[in-house]
Image (tube, rainbow, N blue to C red):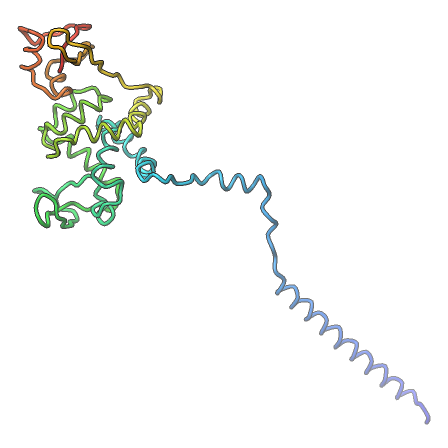
Length: 277
């Protein structure tokens, strides 16, 4: 077979075309592999894991403790603005909302059982209380319930005497709320005081006032009454005390205090020891 120059040229051209087509296929394959490649993140190191878990505070098994953790900041802010002890606000919220699990708290964000009353134009929910299907206020957020609670006490004259008490006198506030008609339960003050002391809610009063968080509230001592063979409570008069304030604090009356201490006037002196019960 005679190989001509033209035949050789034809073979060379075909070879070059085949080489060119193969090269293009390899380029396409590499692009496809690049686009489908998965990227895996490096594993979290021990230090990074500690950092992640440390920012998430575990919830307590005690629902009261969880409630306090959720609302302590709101209560302290209300104390700064409206001079109502944070301990009292928290204890009322715990008691009246079932630590946030009651129907009014869950469905209406109403933590203090505040009823609609005349002039209320906000949301409403109906719930059995002293009477069937009474009207209660609803709020978009629980913090609004706390603010409404502050305004409820601040704007009503029957609670005015409470604001004459020391701001961290949670016992006086607990008794004064009952006397002013906030609750019908005779044991309401004791229930509030028990919650405050069990969960040390007075610590949040201290924080709001800029005091030592662990400072204990002043305790009224019981001393033996040798004449009547029993025990009486005594109060040492400090600056700002008055018979009216003390009557609210100790759930008594001005006249009864005067009678117990054989006082002829309402005047008191700092350091004076009074029998209060």
